[in-house]
Length: 191
Image 1 (cartoon, rainbow, N blue to C red):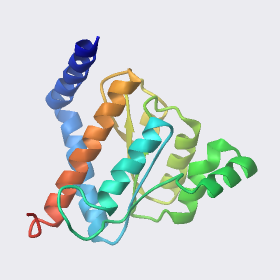
Image 2 (cartoon, rainbow, N blue to C red; image 1 turned 45 degrees about the horizontal axis):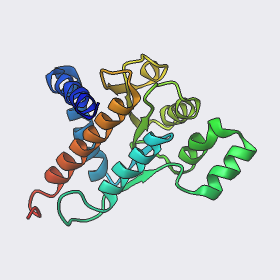
Image 3 (tube, one colour; image 1 turned 90 degrees about the vertical axis):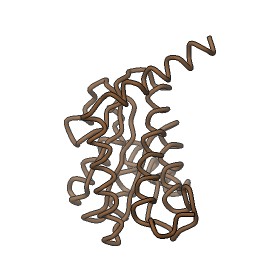
Image 4 (tube, rainbow, N blue to C red; image 1 turned 30 degrees about the vertical axis):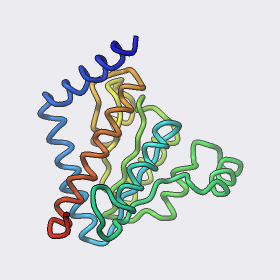
């Protein structure tokens, strides 16, 4: 079973590697991220469950470091303030926990990366609506279930409907973006 799970993960990554449209979308996100960060804007991420952990993980790679020491990059994961989440969940409902926070901190020109393996999480969809109203650049991370998210924003769609494999690819894509952004913004500081 272990070998079959590893094989399944490798096969999906082979599909990513051979998908020119997906590679181009990732490259566009890298280029947009570089421009946003050069313009003193920020990268904002959110997700639920494992995708929440992925949002925090990717954001931390920007604000701390990825492969080498360099200045911090502006990034935040929504939902990390437990008091705010419980207040918004209680006062407005869980569907609004990300959109309320995004409404408070998002600005035109920021990049918003909502993560939803199904593309149908109500709180993610509401956050996308706010990001659109605020004229943010949006790149959704999802799977191939053709969720509502794919109608609302440009998406990086992992060609799978199996949540664990999708999440593995989302973190791979997040690492690719972090590595390329860091390398291009700080090419003179690499050691």
